[in-house]
Image 1 (cartoon, rainbow, N blue to C red):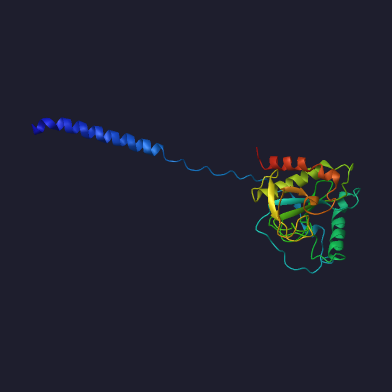
Image 2: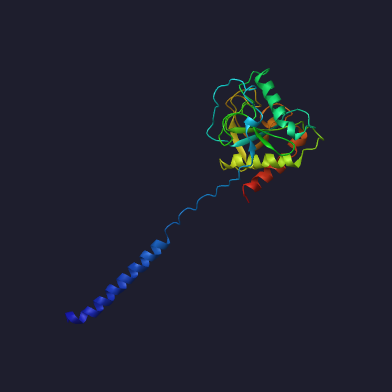
Amino acid sequence: MLLACVPGLAAALALLLCANGVENTVAAGRRPAAAKPVAAYHAPRPHIVPRTAWLDAAARHDQPPPRYDDRVVAVFVHHTDSPNGYDCADVPRIIRYLYAGQTGSRDWDDIGYNFLVDRCGTIYEGRAGGTDRPVTGAHTQGFNHRTTGIAALGTFTAGVPVPKAMTDAIAALAAWKLGLADTDPRAAVRLTSSNSYSRYAAGHTATLPAIAGHNEGYMTSCPGAALTARLPEIRETAARLQGRP
């Protein structure tokens, strides 16, 4: 009688093992899938002429070591309010003149802009500290931290043509710098004002475009109506260079 029961026991055991196998398979199928990594959108580093091309030892002022933030999450665009009809070969001399004015009559420790772009689309390193590092500039009252300042050489008030080579270079530079922090050039970012000389009281957190005109953070007409009108195009170009959809 006991032996007669063996096939039935074997069948029951097989059925139990099969059921357990199905249950384990289903349970395994219900495990959450591993999270997909968030895509990082970076842009290539454009060519940047080093500051040694415009600042020699004879013209250099003594200055303290550079100051740094943790990252750059926004760009402020400026114009230098200087003549437009320059020869691009003269740009090193023009930047040296701007540097002399800011470190002389204004008594700044260095040129305020992190970068300068000429009408031919050449990008120059401005403030010392390393182009690939988050150097704290002196370009926008209240919002020098976690930002970089890009100055367009010239005056771009209403009706003044803005060279495409210049806007393309600004977009390429902004795309690269913002990409290091994975910031979308079309996004809005939150920045805290460090002093009340800006449009916002010290300590106030403002929501500003990731690529903003100087006038977004400070009471000024800079970067001029003509260049301000090109900022939406610059943002879109920068986002495309980062490979964003």
